[in-house]
Figure 1 (cartoon, rainbow, N blue to C red):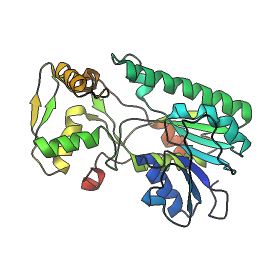
Figure 2: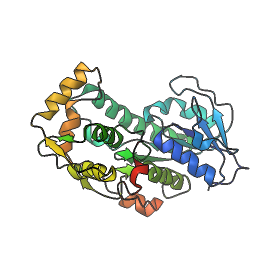
Figure 3: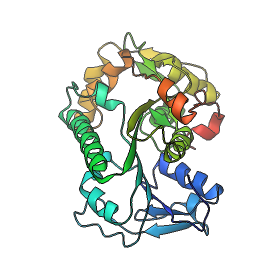
Figure 4: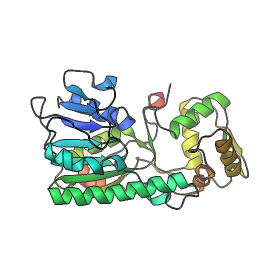
Length: 294
């Protein structure tokens, strides 16, 4: 169970991410000492309960220099396996880390980079479970769906920026795939609950938002929140246009698969997380403009 500020801090990686900022904020608000492994400390944790641990997980020999019994790993999950032994020597006994439901839907992507990321996440999950089991570290893996909430994501926030600027949104024909966007703060709550749950040890959980929406409706909610009329432009062959734009603009993350997935259901079952972590995610954009980038 998490204790107050007089106990060993909880180490958080990926502290400047959407989830990381909310994990730090929630822990600090609960008077739990936190340490952020990062190049800089986000404003949400700048108080007497937080400390900055300067470190780079891409380096092979990471020396943290103090004991951390608990870790919430939010940086790329593939960065963690090389450091587990060292973290164990520094007292690690409880680990919660984030993967993604992308492991289910990007393995067959036409984009080589997306396929590689999915494979790396799957391999990292396996390595983490095996290493932790052998060392006696209790582990939990959380796999979110589409994340939003602090304006730092590349999905909801990118769509909001486009709608603000263009006042319309292009849709592929048949863009009826379901989405289950999940707020970063709900994921932070799930991570902290997992740290305290014996039932969550040695388990993986898919974690999605509180609503399942057709892709078109998800984008429509963004129009509504921005107080703009819903204006969609159906574009046959949109995936080819987007792929060409990504190539010309040298943005490898902009691919035709981004458009093709508008037709796919990218959802998950929250039942296990609800039972073990009391996971109760909010409805999409229930926070209004506060959930979108400024």
